Figure 1 (cartoon, rainbow, N blue to C red):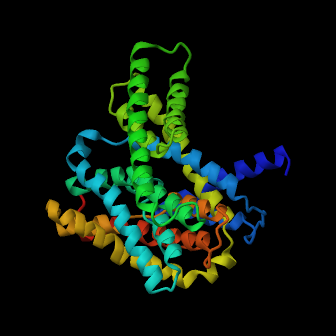
Figure 2 (tube, rainbow, N blue to C red; figure 1 turned 180 degrees about the vertical axis):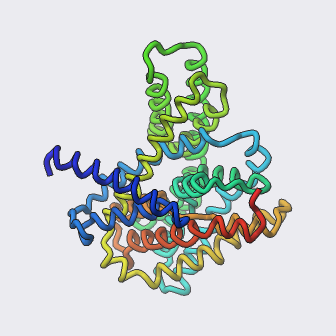
Length: 395
């Protein structure tokens, strides 16, 4: 495919995504589902039959796209409203993610007959809620929830990737023999510490330096402030990742610290990142749809449905109840938090990591996770406004 054909395809896809969003919004269907559907329509087994199976490109593109989504998710978080529930959110994003992974892994092993390590890997890949999906559904539907639950969900989804990533990485190491059973506890603790510590440390340092620069320097050319903040977003991921920290956690934290600071031309920055993150959401879910093969989805449909049901109706509610009941969270709030645990791009990226690891697995993890994400966005995402209304959680 030459450059002109690539540009023609790219512009056609973006226009198609925008038009699809206009249609789906009328019916209350999450726009991300439309983007995935278009990707599948353009893919190897779709209407346009574009051959695409480049896992490396998809992983790299999704990584970059998620940087901007995470950063801008933090940028739009109102810390004044989020502060009272930050503790609950961090508890869910850490222990909640681990509990969800373990429960789902045990279910896959005992009920579905997965090998133990493969079942636990499946649980780890699916354990984090997806920031791109949660931000998209909450903000596109303009959902304002009681007890700052919308802020809780956003902070949880913005900060739980380090734990899912850590679990996925450690299980892959154990499965390929690079970590023995005796080394696993130590590896879990050290990986978790460095991921979180360097993610937080780099995020704070980069945000404070960026704030100081924006306060003391004026940009003589229009648009340079947006370019500078964009470079800060990229740096906030790249620096901690280079030294063993979690880049997504850092990017989200930098977004919070910059977004809650008094910045010149903040309105212009919001407009710029609104457009950029919308484009990234379009492309990330389109590419993931393009990467899938519907014929392979049909082969994993039943186990995917079973895992999705267990994850949504048992594992997520159990972890939520266990952690939030002692903190006096109401039953209605717990029910909504459980339902709003959307899976999305992050889980698929972790599944791509597993696929590229070269480890032999009995099940097609990528298409299983892809199928579960489809179910999560289409059912949980579509019904979230209705569920919030039924639980009397709309503010």
